[in-house]
Image (cartoon, rainbow, N blue to C red; front, side, top):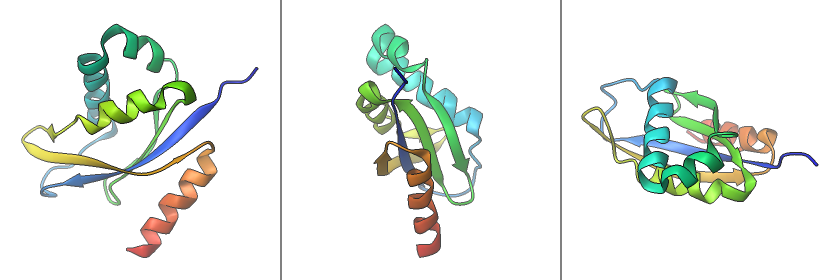
Length: 114
């Protein structure tokens, strides 16, 4: 049996574009939010498969890979993140797909739209 994953495409909406946000900072924020809001259960279920597949500070798009059965926990944890450093931040979910290619096509369509 193979592992089934979900890919979630988020737009990172920031109040100002003054500071740059790196992949490492985003990973730390997501990890802390899961630990704080879902405790050991969330950590044990998500940290095996959770990964940032794509992030661009230029387009403000983020693609997360997460286990299919627990993608709603990751989605909720990310929605609880309200700030990074001193800047207000919000994550707007755009698409949830079963394949990375579909998620990338959605991201490309958004970039073309702008």
